[in-house]
Image (cartoon, rainbow, N blue to C red; front, top):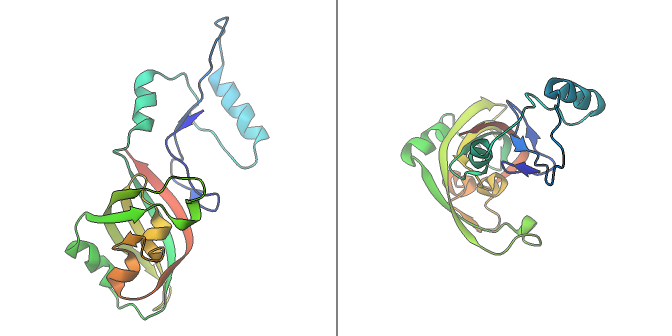
Length: 183
């Protein structure tokens, strides 16, 4: 199976979901598949994962989901240890259009990924809801492959700039959802 990326197990995939291609090798015999029926049957038997629009695919669709030039839209519930003024987050991205960040492989995934420096983009940052002066819901659009949790908390300086350094406070992420994948 080939998927267009992956999420941490505690991150929900909202919106249209994630594209994937299931590849079958060494097929000895061509046979007709009722994709609609297979889609329906899978969704009846799977309590956690749902499939939409199951169909026969091709090489160009495979290449599309594997491309790196996509962006992702996130919703994050964050906590800040200092009071954040209204519109401060919305003004941050205006000052830092397409903010380039440097990310060293995060500590939390270092046991399964090689140590590497990555340059990523924060395309937009917007305050969606102010729960109070310390708890906010923000929307982040970033280049694919950006470690969003580390962009928010800084990962002990391994991601810079990070939201905490931009706001001049400590930030922590309480919940993260992928709202959409933008091709």
